[in-house]
Length: 244
Ligand SMILES: O=C(O)[C@H](O)[C@@H](O)[C@H](O)[C@H](O)COP(=O)(O)O
Image (cartoon, rainbow, N blue to C red; front, top):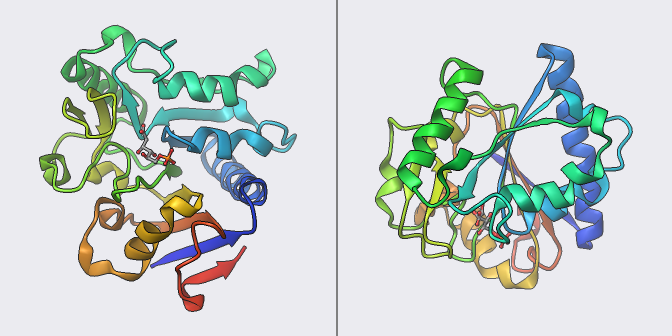
């Protein structure tokens, strides 16, 4: 069961997401002293950070930031998801408020080594199958999430927590990605998508479950939320959407 919240603009979406993430963060920190979150790339870091970075009620120093996927490029490369979140969020926080953010290490373009290294970082922190407090995902125009693409063998990966991909249809081709065992063990997953260009795919994802697209195959133990703007929600039936 998923809940879809629509917002009149991307600014309103960022505001709603700020409120939602801040609440999940406070609850997690109160419960176990940390907020573990996995972040996607693309438009998500900017939509996530626009208001959140100024939220005085968020204790970022208790955040453990991992990646839903990352491109196998240097950390200062324009394609790096880490670099994007660093610009949008990390660099805007005071030095005493810095979260712990994990990176894919020094393996650059070696996707297999980067996947092994990153999975070890997850094991070192979680000790067992990760149960993220929140995983933040985008929705690709083909219905992909993380770097899990339609028809790709990685959709059937059930043992590795992190897998390499070297033929991503979305450039760059070399990436690492969380797999469904981790996504489905999350306490909550929130998809964030905006723009008229996503209308058709969002309608398919939310109202045509038989398609079994990658976004539809994310079935966490916890809840699935969709944060979308009205432009992306243009083809959804009224009963599909809720007001935040
Ligand atoms: O590293 C990546 O490329 C992302 O994690 C990817 O899964 C992204 O979330 C979708 O492609 C949606 O991207 P947009 O929101 O920019 O359309």
